[in-house]
Length: 100
Image (cartoon, rainbow, N blue to C red; front, side, top):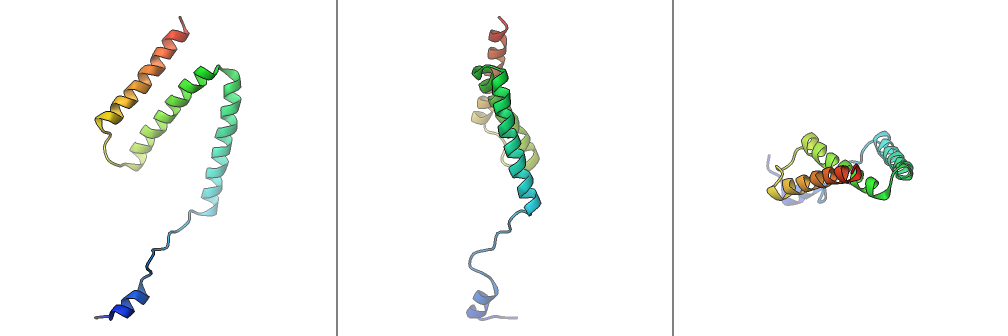
């Protein structure tokens, strides 16, 4: 029932061992990142750099929002929400200005 301090040190490691993700999952992550990177270069050839930048900002905003809903975390602060609103307003202003 009671263990000595030396026995307790032997029973648990000082640094907990971190498990690596499975090889197939790591491979899928690498492959999907590579495909996204190649497709980004293909897309930038089709549009102007400003358009690409606007869509990239929206893409990142979507990733942040979806990731927050999927994985949870603390609620967005007022500063976070104002930054998201600013990004959406900028994309909207760019869309309106590009069609004028």
